[in-house]
Image: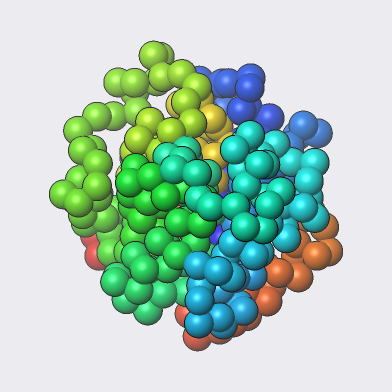
Length: 271
C-alpha cells in the first residue's frame, strides 16, 4: 500500500507534463496525493471492515472516501457512480481498476484468495473483463512479490496468464503516450517493476515512460514496495503528504495485516 501511495505522489506532477527521463526530482512542491491514494485507502478500509460481503463493503467505502476527498480528479463515470448509492458498475476497463488493489496483495493468504479479493474490490465499478483482468494481474503480481517469488518468476507468470511481456521500456518509451485503459497501462507498469533494480528505480522506470504517470507509478510502486520494501527516507517524505485521517487508515491496515510479516526481510530466490 505505501509503495502504491509513494508512486502516486511521485508521479503526480508528471501526469499531464510527462518526462521521459529517469533523473527527475522524486518530490517537489507540485507533488500531491491523488484519487489513486484515496481509493487505495478506501480498499484498505473495506478489508479492515471484516465484512462477509467484501464487494458491498468496497462499494460503500469507495463512495465514502471519494466524497470525503471530492476535490480529487476522479473519472467522469466514477463521479456519476459515486453520486448514487444504487448505481451499478459501468463496464469500465480504465486503469482505476488496477491502481487501488495493492491492499489485496497483502491481505490475501493464497493466490485464489487474492484473485477473489481483487474481483470484489473492482467489480463495483470496473466490471469490464479487461478492467477485472488488469486489477487481478496487478494484485497477483503484488501477492507473488510479497511471498518470495523473484522478478523473473513473477514475469513468467504474468506473461503466461495475463499479458505478453515481450517488450522493453526502452523499445516503447519514445512512442508511448497518454492512455487510461488497463490494457495500455498495466503491462507497462508491470514491466517497470520487472526491469527495476530497487524500489526507487522501479518508480523512476514507471514515471519515465510517460503517459498516466501517477497511476502507472502507483501500480508499479505497489508491487515494488512488497518486493523491495520502501526506503525509509522515501517513506517518510511520502507520509508528509498524507493528512491525519489517511495516515490512520494506513497504520491500522499495516497493523492488522503486516503484524507477523516484514516485507523488507523476505528472502528472494536469485533472479
